[in-house]
Image (tube, rainbow, N blue to C red):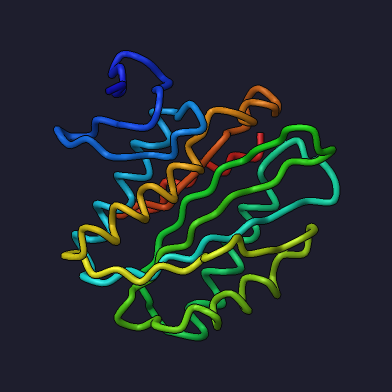
Length: 197
């Protein structure tokens, strides 16, 4: 059973060792350890602060290539404001990855995590997110919503499996040197790898 080589930046799926536990990941791709570890960090910190999570998977496509991640940074800045206006001080986090394969412009895979006590119907957030993405095509992948209580291990494992797609090594790295492949908002302040340079 192949598991992560903890000395490597990449891992062969489908099994991933994280903090003494083996997790099943998407098996079609090699997984980037740095991104997968960041996903676990954000999820762990979320459930340390809230008992229920609503996750929303979003795809953001651009019409034109940008030499930075300014479009996704702007998206999250506007989204924060709109969420505050709609829900007040709602606890939320996000993870994004930048990818580009054969297309002329990059696209972003995003997961938005919000407090499941307050957001039981994520369609409102989807409408807000759709309305502020001005750079191209906005879409939801199939089955984009997850509602999970921290004690629902099966659902949590399903979310980890789904989010492992964001950590695939394929289609990453096609960007200017100082531009990041991924970013996330974690507790204890914003850790947002959206550098414009």
